[in-house]
Every structure is written in structure tokens, then in C-alpha cells.
Length: 152
Image (tube, rainbow, N blue to C red):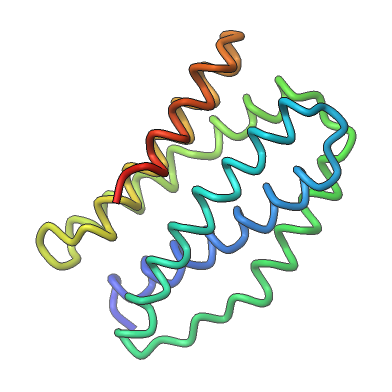
């Protein structure tokens, strides 16, 4: 497989994992505000996964989404007792390598591909969401996700 194929599959599977993770976390959340935010994160990840799936299928690649979805649900179970601020800090810490891979995928992909542009933008939106939420600006944080979902 090419570098493009590898990065595309990794991106797709990561979005599937993220959607399952955030969805399962939202389902288990006891705080209404956190539940709303987690569902917004789940929608961002699911939409990105759906858009990437078209590229994966178009490239004739085996998406293999069952494993990542199961992994995401297992990760949600492991975070069940995690403090919200700790979760957000961990999330922000995990994003830079993904963003770097997404930027590389965009660079080597089809010029100005809106799906790959959205892939990069969605990761930046999630980072900004977590940053604002950690600052105690929950309404602004959720607005970032809603604004991203309003694009495309």
C-alpha cells in the first residue's frame, strides 16, 4: 500500500474509533452538559468517518471498521471514572500526532480535496473545543463543534 492508503485507512479507522468512544462515553455520562458535548464530539467524528469512507471505498481499500469501533467502546469503559478535566487534557495531548498525519494526508492527497480539508479542520475544532472547555468556557466550546458541523 502507498503512504496515502496507509494514512487514509488510519484516519478512517481513527474516526470510527473516536465516534464509538465519544458515543459510548455520552451514553454513560451522568452530567447533562458533558453528555451534550460528548454527543457533539461523536457527531463530528462520525461525519468525518462517513466522508472518509467514500475515499476509502473509492481507493478499493478494506475499511475494517469493526475493530476500531469495538476498541472505542472499550476505551470508553476504561474512562468511565476519569475526571472531565483529565480526559480533556489527555484528549488534547493525543491530538498533535493525528493532526500531523492528517496534514500529511492532505498534502499527498488530491489537491484541495474537501474531505481532507475537513479532516484537518475537524481535528483543529476538537482541540479548540477541549481548550475552551478546560478554560471553563463550555458554551464557547460547544459552539466550536456546532460551527464545524454546520460546515459542508
